[in-house]
Amino acid sequence: MSKSIIKIKNLTKDYGNNKGVFDISFEIPKGEVFGFLGPNGAGKTTTIRHLMGFIKPDYGECYINNCDCFTSSDKIQETLGYIPGEGAFINDMTGTEFIDFMAKYRGLKNLNKADELIKRFELDSNTKIKKMSKGMKQKLGIIVAFMHDPDILILDEPTSGLDPLMQNIFIKMINEEKKKGKTILISSHIFEEIERTADKVAIIKNGRIVAINSIKNLKKNQSRKFTITFNNQKDIENIQKAKIEITDIIDNKVTFLIRNNIKEFIKILNKYDIIDIDEEKQSLEDIFMNFYGGENND
Amino acid sequence: MINLPLFKQSIKSNYKLVLIFLAVLTLYIAIIVSMYEPEALKMMESFAETMPELMAMFGMNMEVATLTGFLITYLYGFLFLIMPLIVTIIVANRLIAAHVDKGSMACLLSSPNKRKTIILTQMQVLNLIIFAIIAYSTIITIISSEIVFPGEIEIVKLMLINLSLLTFHIFLGSICFIASTIANETKYSLMFGAGIPLLSFLIQMLANMEGKLDILKYFTLFSFFRPLAILSGEKYPYILLIIMIVITIIIYTVSIKIFKNKDLSI
Image (cartoon, rainbow over all chains, first blue to last red; front, side, top):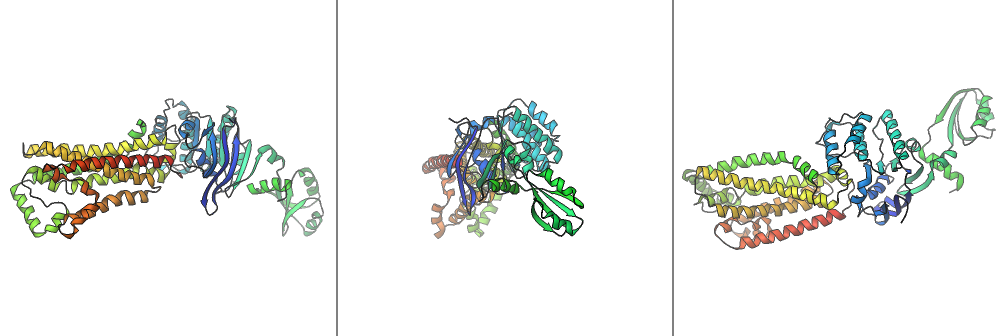
């Protein structure tokens, strides 16, 4: 018997053409927020479908609370909340009708939490689901996933379609739930979203887990790219002699890669005549490639 | 074994369609019953004389001396076969395949309900709807017959025929339902769920035209329903009835098994 709440062991589901998930393994202990990062089509949703008991593994095992995810899904679902990747509801209902139906359907009598969430996310729940915008549907999905106060949360791209304000409210809520000791799996293709909530993060690419690490470690080794626009060409020649890694030079713009040497970088910049400074948003891959590129050179 | 809120919800999303069909059926039954008149009969007979094949295709090829016989010819040859079947095809598709296709099955599965509970619930919805349509049609047939021609209708025979009709439609329903269970997309569910019974009906129409095509009656599901044989007191329709019940139970059992083990990409 394992202490982990969610446990995936060597999970493989081959859809052919290199599609599917291959040999995925990870464990999520109680009270941990686990970020599941990857580009679209990497296999995040396929992995989650296994956890939800929608599909059977070709090979490998999935457990939640030590119960097999496919055969005991009804038992697992008692204490689980799920936000589907694509909000799919029963469209001929209004939001309120849907919430009422889902509550009755899962045997939930107390709707206090649902009401609280409707207020918190400012959802106009009397609208027909058919007529709801993507963001409204996402809010509805959040409410239905959280209304029975589950111990485990599986959230498939939960903030897609939400405006930044609502994203913040959502992230705040996740952090509150985390404090209550909830175990949370959150998938996303945006690093920032995971960064603000997760303890640990796994990156998945082409159906395979490329890396698993704690957010702390990642941040410690995080590198940044700054693009500096110089006033004259001579400075560019000079700065290339400094001990700062340069990734790119285009005209009078030079891109630097900064790891733990930001102070030194600023000191050096002080000596030059610069016009502009710009921080380049780092893609997920950059972050991981920097991290792993630094440790093992493959 | 069933989930009551889901049962109610499924009824709720289908009752309007059923009501429309019941209204149409009411109208037709009333019209057909009132047509049992010597003059109208003569007109029908002259039709039959001029276009025997066409009339035969719609199952209208028997002597219509009694009211019951007349109703079997004109109601049970086409209307009572096709109208409930259309409702069955639409509803069966909505109950499972449409939920999978649209993804709302994800909502239904992310709850502490077993897949078996979900599918049993939807099955009962379909069967209740079929039962309601046949029971309603029976009542309307009896009432309108009694109003226009008191004492003319053979109620016991009619009830037996409708029992056979109900079993037949539940049997067809099980085919639509298993198609809805197997398919991941609505179009495939409809292709088989509607295709098999409707093709069968087409074959039945051809088989009704006497002659060489008679052999086709062994290739259509509609041969399971023999109202005229029940009317003339033969025993074999009851054997067919038992066979239909057995096949229905098998199909539904297989449906449950398939759905329980199915990969649902929702």
